[in-house]
Length: 469
Image 1: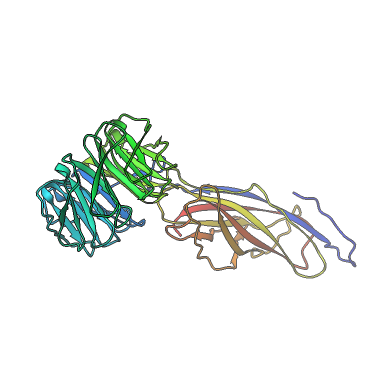
Image 2: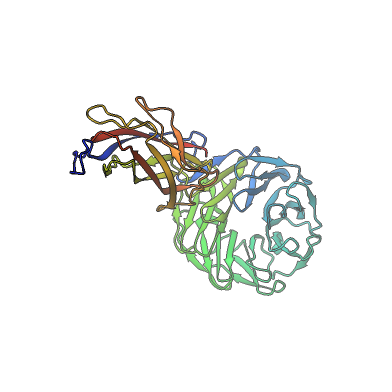
């Protein structure tokens, strides 16, 4: 509380009012919908118990996973999965999508299937009976696939594939192409093959003498390959030479994806999830929500959004702003002062709070508020409509994934009564926004009528943060 002050301004008895101390009652409503979220990774329901061998998401919503028995799983929102009708019962080991509706998948016995609308799939003539473990597409018509006996085949029309000489008979398990002419494939017996013109391939050796199952090349200057026994190799010259990196695990590493030349993730047996923030040079372990599952593939369309797939129909989702809960941090008091002058007056003060959504639910959130009526020691009251929120803004705080998009129209009257009335929305984050911590400034205006009594007035304001805009 601040002491009453007065000034000698004409003959007013009610001379000054000095600020109001506001006690903030913090209410947090946790989100149960993402209760499985752990350290940013959460398990999702795939809708199938079949083994899944590969997953790819385009953006943060359109996702596909493929696997045993020709299984094709699809999600249109990144959360809810449904099984689509597949034209094959052969195992599908790889998938490559160019956008939300155009994808190719490859697998056992030379199987290749494709879709142009995201739901209707048809077989494509591969021209081989060899199992095709790897697939990389750079357009809706140009793809390469790699497989057993050193098989490499290319399509330039999206309809038929022709063979290319890989110069190896070793099985190739993974392939990636950063552009329309450069590709790298890796496989058994430390085999690496590369092309710089999209046609002619050269064979090289990886640095570690083992089988490699996956490779990711976010650019022509970086490729990361993973394999048996926790092996990780990196190349800065498109697979011509490789450097061994310490992974910190001896578990099999089966999938790798680099969202950029900095951020990479690798997955494998026993729920292994590794992350690198420096292009594969150093790796740290992530906590998996399915620690006993074998994770065969992973995809990261952005550095803060990712998915992993595995045996038994496992699908996990990564959210860099997940793994915790929905929280609101507020100051304990704020105050202001106004000197009466015989006229109605208003005074303004900002209330700065931190809204932190690390629930992973992506449902958005809203801040609500209510209050008790301003009252001084003599029980004199301000009107119940004395306080209004005139504007609000938000900026990203440290660790933010995206700032909130507010839809509240101002001004908004802060409810007041002897007993605090039902709270109203003061600020919101529309669905999918406001992930992570955001600093929100709420600009309140308090009206001081001309006939107010002097004194120190106080009110208790109660704020809550709840799920949903």
